Every structure is written in C-alpha cells, then in structure tokens.
Amino acid sequence: MSKKYILKPGKHQFAPGSPAVHSNDNLSDAEAQWYLEKYPHIASLFTSMPKDERTENTKVKRSKVSKSAVAEVSTNH
Image (cartoon, rainbow, N blue to C red; front, side):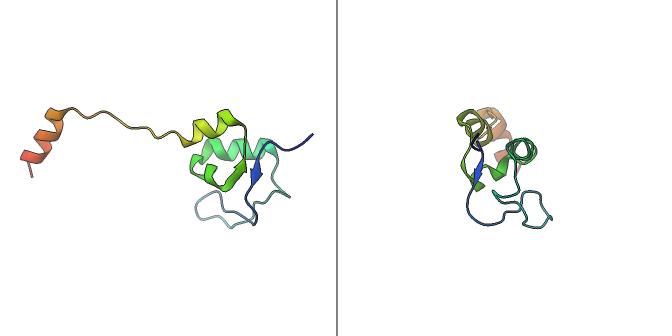
C-alpha cells in the first residue's frame, strides 16, 4: 500500500515553535491528515495528498462586506 500524503524533500516544521522533524520517513497518512486538520497552512509542504484534502485545505475563506460598512469605516477615519 502506497502513502497518500507525500512531503516535499527534507524535514518540515508543522506546529509553530516546534522543531523541523517531519519527513516522509516518519510521517504516516493518519498523522499527516491530523496535522492538516489542525494546521491547514502546511498543505503547501506536500507534493501529493488526496484531491479532496488539498481542495479543503487551500480554500480561501472571504467574508462579504457591505458597501455601507466600508463607507462607514472610511468616514470615521
């Protein structure tokens, strides 16, 4: 059975403030999935992952701001 999550070469840091210790040699698919759920910004460290996982972790969430809210902020400054 081949791995679904493949990291770019080298050792990588996943959690802020932690050492760079993660590599393809010591990271299981289950661990990769857990880290991606907790730290979605690390998706760019992988060269391969299930397509639905990559899509979910790279979505940019934007909130809609009404024109009146923008106008209110601009007039208050």
